[in-house]
Structures are given as structure tokens and as C-alpha cells.
Length: 298
Image (cartoon, rainbow, N blue to C red):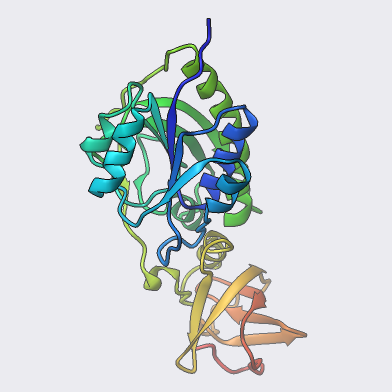
């Protein structure tokens, strides 16, 4: 007969909130939720305390999930499974080895490919046509544990970070339902990852989000899509100031004798700029004073 199980939940981003909400909707409440009161690191930070209070779930704020007091708290609960969805630092063995079924993590990529940092941003910035929604049993490596559920997710040309994020949440909810039922029946399907076909994406910096109009139009469009909400936005430098771009579309100019960065037209708030191989309309931006035609966004 299916049985209930004890769990601990770790997370501090919007995805964490969505997965915790889904577990509650499935009739399961973790014994405790470990989260952060604030985070300057996570652009999609979400304080889970509110939903915990509404659902009468204990919660613990921490900045270090591997701290002794956190480990002691988890040990005292002796959970059969830990859900860790949306925590940026690696979890150590003193936690990983506590639960019977392990620590279930999540990575929005087609593991074993594309381990590492910023998977939604990199997938869009690189112009990938597909990504994945992957749940795994965490180990001390980065996204290298056994896969327990994976679904391929198509990336459409119209997708930006916000749209892709939402797509992944909806897919992950369906996967979590299946995982939940496996846990109720005391089993998890596990598939070991191959280390022969993997790559690991690096941490992105501010420079990675900068638009250089010598880039191709498509590469600029991909960057704008990738850094859309909930992320900090692509930007360019003009008059030694940084300006964000939130929406753009391909222009029609492909003249080879015009220099990248030249302003080709200004219509209302929209700015047409020459790129390395064509032109691009900046549709939603934060320029406080519009440039004039013939000047340069440099």
C-alpha cells in the first residue's frame, strides 16, 4: 500500500515557490522549509516564508545550507527525502547522505549536457532550439547525479527568459507529480549520467550581458531574450552609461558600407541600429534621451 513520507524542502527562488506549492497541492507538507530571507545573488529570489505561514509549515532562514545548525535540524527530522529546488551553492555529503531516497534536485537542461551555471540564460543566448527539464539525485558534483525524470522542452524563436521559465515550470509540475507517486510507492527510477558527453557552462558576468553592435543581429536578439525578466536585462554602453534593452526585433537594413552602432532611424521610442550583419530595432529600452539619426550608440 502507498504510504506517506517525511521530507525537507530547500529553495529560495520562484521555481522553489512553484514546486513547494505543487507539493502542497498534492497533499504533502514538508517537515521544514529551508530558505533565505534575502539574496543579492538570485535575480528570481522568492522568500518562501509567506507560503509556509499560510500552510502552517515550519521554516528556517539560512545563508549557508551546510551550516552545523541546519545539518542538525535536518538530522533531527530524519527525512526520507529532501527536495532541493533553487539553491545556488553545492550541498555536502553531511546532508546528501541523510535521507533514504537522497536529495532530489533540478536542472533545466538536457543532462548530461549543459551542466553548470545559468542554464536558461545560456540556452537562449546560444540560440539553442531545445532544452530539458531534469530532476536528479544530487551528489557532491555539479548536476552530475542520477537522473530520475527528464523531459525535452522546445525553445521557440519567440521565447524569452520569462516565457521559457514558465514553460519549464509547467513541465516540472507534471514530472513532480510522477516523482511524488514513486516516492509514495517507495521507489525511484534512476539513470546514471555519462561523463563522456557532458559540458559545464561557466558563471556569467556583467560583460556577458553587454550588447556590442558589431555582433550579428541574431546574437543580439538572443542576448536580449536570454536576459529578460526575471534576469537583469541585456545592456549597451552609450556616453559612458549603461542602458538596458528588454525587447528588440530584426531590422531590414543590410548595407555593408554602414558602421555597426550607427543610428539609422528613430520612430517614436523605437531605435534602428546597424549591426555587424544587418540592423536591429530596439523596441523596449531605458534610454532617457533618444539619439538622433546618423549618430552612434557607442
